[in-house]
Length: 342
Length: 251
Image (cartoon, rainbow over all chains, first blue to last red; front, side):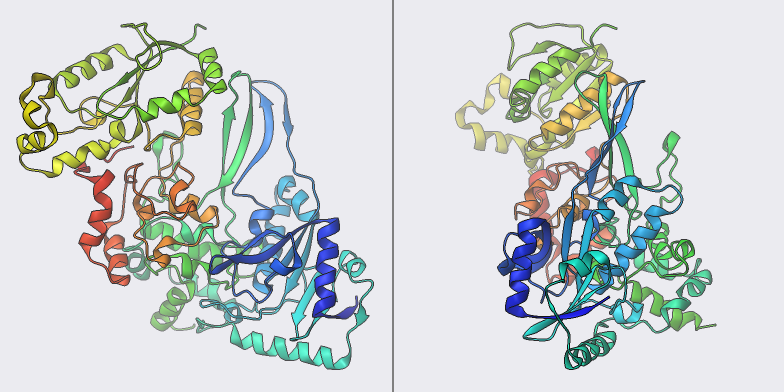
């Protein structure tokens, strides 16, 4: 696949042309922060952003969606959104998040709702220009990505290096000039810098060691200590690019004969998340729920996706947690300090 | 199967939650297709002593209202508390913050304070007087939540009313946290279900849906310290809907 170079003004034209022919979701300012939103003009695009409020996950797994319509006791039909779209400006750590979700939603019971959206998406990633206040992607080895996007953009000041990684990406970049050696070297320099610089919280072990660390930490007092001030508000879940738990509910229409089955986000920190028939709740302690999230990130989910740690170091949970206890690195480092690496 | 009958009663309140029924407009006809409304003072003149579902709006502030509510409870198979006044006592509970209720009455009613129909007592939520089967929270209620609950009951299903706090819906809406913008938002301790309407429009949560079942007081203390505030800063924000609420923190 090819690597191209576009002057910034040509890139703006590229974006305008993209907006003409597809639904483009791009990163834009939202107050003093940033978020993904439908892009109407290249001028609104902010590829210099630090981090978005929500990860791009919601375009594949919306906070609420209709899975199917049904007749009570009768026929049913799946409902799908089936429109192409472009996600423009996905940071490498979020690309890794999407890659992990793809694996999870395509294994076991293949999730057609997620995968249909995913297959309709074109992902244009971009290397980080402004590290966010809480990013620790360097620690999680997600500061730079080599796969999982259609195009990867790297900002070189007055131009972008644009690498096509798929046929889709190749077609979009067809008209652009090849990148010269100087541009490729400059891109290597950006990668080398980001591999170290996206590290506002530094994990004191290799991320690959985390599943073993947690294997020795289930009864550690860190869980009770940290969860003492946990609101169980699920903010950490709600902003996480790799939290994918959901609830499913039926609602009937006023005719009481037809209805729809809806799926909405859930969160393992929430009181009631584990409530089952008969009002039994098997994780009713805050500390147990607090522990569960971090075990999902660094032990349970990794076991399902070839050992990849399911925390990509975006740092959103760190910023979203009002009492300031959600930072995974703080917890893992405390365990390392206490238990050592062995 | 015959349609279930519904009776709607109001006590101390602004009747704004009932107004939300009227605001259903065409959907009101759908509702009347699945249930018969047999008493509803705000919208019809008929009355009835027989009903399956009693919907109670307003808080209880007089002895005679307590008696009336108990009678309604004895007649209804299902009793629903509607809106903040009914579910948590609402703004009417502000009065309970004063020790001398006679003084409060004189302040409000002046020379008429001694008239018999103004013989009021401490404000109670509906649940402090009778057993409540379901709460429809909010000031005012959310129409979509109300119609969902009605459909569930008619179908014989238990409606799912959120046990989690506002932050869940607020974050899903992609909002920045209002605490970071200097607002003392009650979102982390207040029950969701309103789709975080106030914070999504830039205004802190007032707490009209009442506290979640298990709010974390330790966490609240930690957060007010972190933001350089004191307990009174938080309490003044909680007073509007959270006054003397302890006995009514329920589902």
